[in-house]
Length: 271
Length: 308
Image (cartoon, rainbow over all chains, first blue to last red):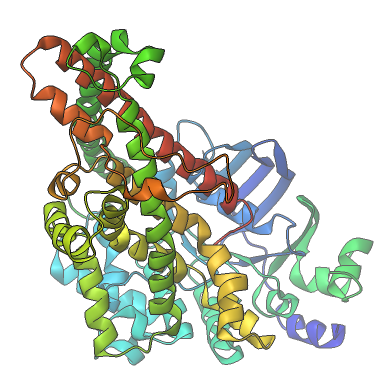
């Protein structure tokens, strides 16, 4: 793998100032029935930074991401252990008394494949706002526009907000899903391999968008593309078989990995 | 409720939204119970009336003028044989038609019309099929009031169900599977016989058995074609002692079926016959449940390796 190009891509951000913690996993384990998919993870997600989760297929990175908005609660037989703290209010998102619906209102998620609803572009973005209690037509229009602008989609769709979302291209659909996620001002934005179903040009626009979004919002992204992690993230966690092997600033992790396994993975000798 | 900005607002909003969760859960449960409890009440009532009457003699006796000596031998044998004929005709015809429509037929207005009408056929009242069969099978083809005529009638009745189930099942196979097989150089028929039919089998079988479960309880078309209500002999045995050992004489013999036997008994004034009818009804429900059980088991077995 081209370690040199990775290095040059991350060098420019090497001097970013230290950020404060927005969320933190403490001793997080996760079980699908009896299978222990995550094995006691500790990881800090820094505010207004992009944190990338990398690792080979089946390492548990998506499982980890889906713990944050309690997606696993939708299916029987799943069990969490440990904590995920959300700051500044220091709520344990996994606590039994915490309503997963409340968690999902505070955190937003963008999925692997674009999954717009079979409704109009406007209604797709407005849905989260409606769920959140927004009734005013005027406020809906303003917030939908703001979200579409935030997702760099406004200019392309402003004249056809009533069109079906399915008529958009794949990359546009994914940006629509990002707009849908952004509309409710989430405290943390979760991306689950958001570009794996897209072509390189659409991928580039999503990556640019992510870099743009982190000025205002904290992002946690799962990616199986190491260059992508190097390009967009400030912090990277390398996972393998449900364990967190190494976590650190992206520039440090890609240039001087401390762990032999991480080095093998990012240099392409393994995985 | 306005847009929730802070955590307290979100919590209040969720609490108010969750009321609807509870309200619907309750309504849904009630709606479910209307169906389940009604059936359970009918079934239990029938079981209480009928079970005392169930013994070996009941299954091995011919009908009789005396309620205590009457049995359902001719009825259950008749039902089983009619079902055999029904399946024999409905399965190949239904699967063939469904497969052709999905995989072979060109997509044009004619096939669209045919498709719509097949779905409509499923809604045609069964008595209409009975009248059709009376004219066509019984008189025109000269099959008489036989097991064959009844089987053909019921096959016609469930054919739309089988075709629709076949098509649904075939349509749920991802296009990628077809392309994978074609990419290896398979002909249309090879792709169908090696992939499409085996992979859609669970759905097809479920459809067939649901159709059969409907057919076994059908009374109107069978009465229309003239099934006997009182019959004191069994159809000829399909197995014979002398070569060629197999005989098809039974297909042309007169018969009765379970629902007709029940209908006959319920129209009698004596209470003891009503008890017989309840017992026969209990057996008929068990036969239907057994068929549905078979469908579930087959689907479970066949779907083990199929994931989409």
